[in-house]
Image 1 (cartoon, rainbow, N blue to C red):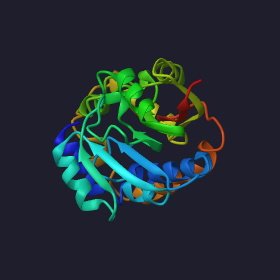
Image 2 (cartoon, rainbow, N blue to C red):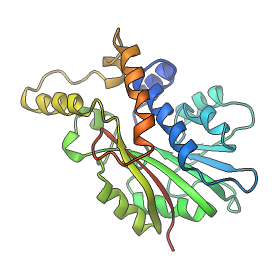
Image 3 (tube, rainbow, N blue to C red):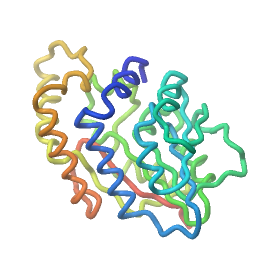
Length: 248
């Protein structure tokens, strides 16, 4: 991901509708789908970026964060609550103590960037403690591919079949999934398809382009989805969420 996009995520983390709303959905997904903890829960945020999800994760256990890009890691260090352990590392391979195992691993909008996604998932499976869970999110539906994906250096967008296949090849099974950012899906799809037919200036990052008077309304609308998409499988959306665990 370009440094400018990391900077935008860091600068807009507390106000932009997409960043605020997705955290609300992540929090509700964890509340609904985390297995009861037998003791202190260890959590790994793999690809923690600028640290936007670290604070919400501390409500569920002790948090470690790993990030590949030094600039993003510096922002995460400024943002991280006390007690969060942060280090630089990449997937596959994390650079953490080989004995560390986690009851929860989160992989928020990371897999789509990786050249070796199955190998990365296999590494994370090996880091799960017995009964541990993986919460993963990815951008959805290849037909929504746009300049946004190019700017963010995505290699693909997912549907549940392709995500389930990569997880299965890594020894993981899907226990729950749903698409999300579903209420805005028709509008997003229409805009992205129209831009293909009527190409224009698409150089403005979507985070910047979405700022304005509508931000509060979009925040409330997107956040409200947490009551639906974390309870049942919604069959369409701009993004995809899955809870997985070790197969067999």
